[in-house]
Image (cartoon, rainbow, N blue to C red; front, top):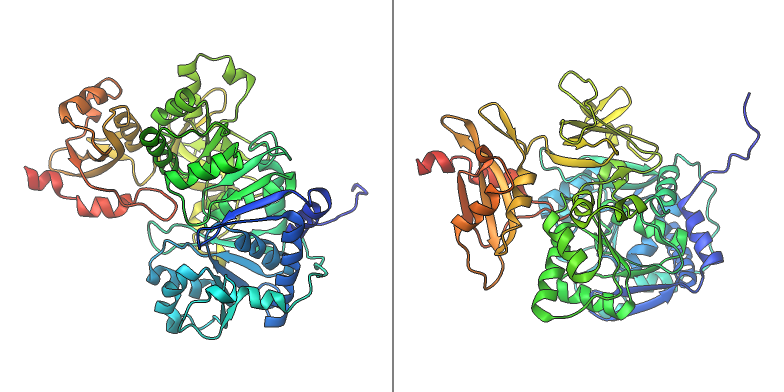
Length: 541
């Protein structure tokens, strides 16, 4: 027997319409590419999204076609999210930090029909224009006054196109399974793979991630997603914030510590989201400048393991709750979080920091499990390791164009992470399976070693990789960057490490470098570092 409830699909355009009817005067604040601050309200976003949908219709965009964006976090990019998906096309967010060759591959693989691009990124597309035959035209996200000179053709001005259209649009009644978004994995090994989101999964993700189970948004929230909108829909915040009526603060291209502090103070931001390197940069600026972030109450931190040192610093210096989170492109992306809770508050500070530095517990709708080499579940005791797998209604069931099928097993998606789960369900990512170091048959966690190094004050950032060794097959070496003006003594660093890791985990070499390479989403590029330093210990010997 079936129930008798209306089968009404959940669509991204429903979020847009809800924001208009429930929160029309709520603000959206953006730092533009030109550096000034732009303000408008949800009602303005709705009208302009309607104009943009009419532009897509005039351009001849078809349902299901991929329409790409190459843009920072700003109000025009937000309009593109809603207009493209609500129209029935697929918004494909291109990573602005990729090399031209990588962009070329992804655009061709997605078969993008049009590309909306912020003016600073026009030269990137000019490099590959002749190699992306599916693209019918380019729209530059600016007004006529700021239109750059470009060889891109055909080329249009965003604001000029909008001015020609009415601000009314009949949003189509799409099926819930209609594709709404496309994002590519980072492709650290092999070519990146595409993950296609649908309306049903995107709205469910927004409903749950914005709820008190996770981000806890409401009309009093002032939310700043520092994570780029080209990276997994800025963790879904552009959908969850309007759904719950939060004020949105979009930082544009300026994500350095000074720029973020200015926006936090100016707009009274109370919640912000980004990778650990963002919050390290903000802390360094606050430490040097003496400036404050009094309104900020919580930072959500994912994309890489949370350094416990920063968890403690943000609590004790700034009274900011550091919320470790975990997810990936394939999970839309939010899946687990160490949300504030009465149970956490009752713990002593050091125990609380330990849990905040984890990835937290799975929210409703997401199942996580760890498996051993024989595909048997591993006990949740906080120390036993296993391969992390995940399932849920906003977890992909297959990649775009059917690639990467070996990542799926018995209804689970294999994340490629090695993890532990404790008895209370808190998840800790120990390492990526390809980053774990196997020395003499025993495993060493690069993440734990990196976090231990951050307890030594002069170290700004640490990266641990495994390199070849004649006797032990593989041994860890540590690359570190230093804080400006800080003196460094390797023996002191090793004393700090000795207090926190097993003796046989100690790196065979510590190398001070000027900087470390990162992906466009803030993760360390360990693949190229392993290549560069593969024979370091052998050559040293």
